[in-house]
Length: 248
Image (cartoon, rainbow, N blue to C red; front, side, top):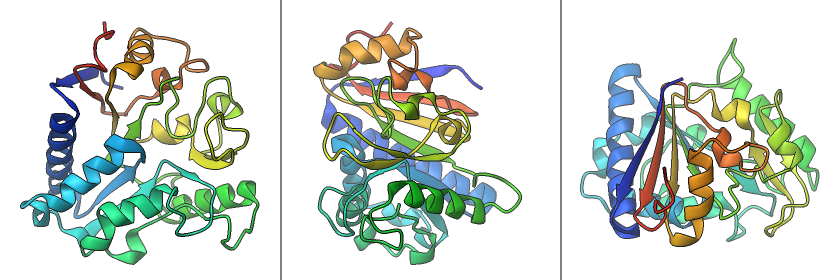
C-alpha cells in the first residue's frame, strides 16, 4: 500500500470542483487503460456535490458513460426512491442526466426489495453481486472508492466501536443501531475498501477537523474508522482549509 497524500483546497466550492475534475480524469485514464472504469460512490454533501459538478461540467462527455461501473459504499436501508437513500440522491445529481448503462449501475438493495425488511439478507445479496461481477475473485476492480468522513470519524456506515468496525472477513454487512438516522443500513467493510486501487476521503468544514487530525495521526480504526482505510495504490484525502486545520 502507498503513502497517504493530503490535498487542501481553499473552501468547499473549490474542493468539490477540483474533486470532480480529478475524478473525471481518473475515469478517463482507467477507461483508456482497461476498457472500462469502476467507481464506488458515497453520499453526503461533498459526495453528492461532486456528482452534481460532474453533471454540470462541459467536459463530462469525455467519460464513456456506457463503460462505467458504479457501486455504493453504503446505503440507508429504506424503500426504493426514498429521498434519503444515497442512490436516489446520486440519480438526481448525475445518473439520470448521463447515458449510463443500467446494467452497470449497482445500487444496494432497498427495504422494499426482494429481501424485504431483512438487511442481513440484503447485505448477502450485494456481496453476491460483487462476486458475480468479478469471476474468480471476491471483488471487482475498483479504480476509485469515494468516502465521506463523519464528525465522529465514520466512513461508509462503519461507525466507531461498531461490529462493522471489527469486521475482518465479510465484504458487506448489515448495520443496526446507527447513531445517525436511519438506524439500519448496509455497508461495505474495511476488507472491501482496501481492495480498491485508490481510496479518496473527501471532507469539508471545521467540525470535522479534530477527527481528521486523529485519523491522519494513526488513531485506532475501531475508535476512528477513517483511520483504517487505505487504497492498494493510493490513499488521497481531499479537504477544504477548515477541515485540514488539525492535520499533522
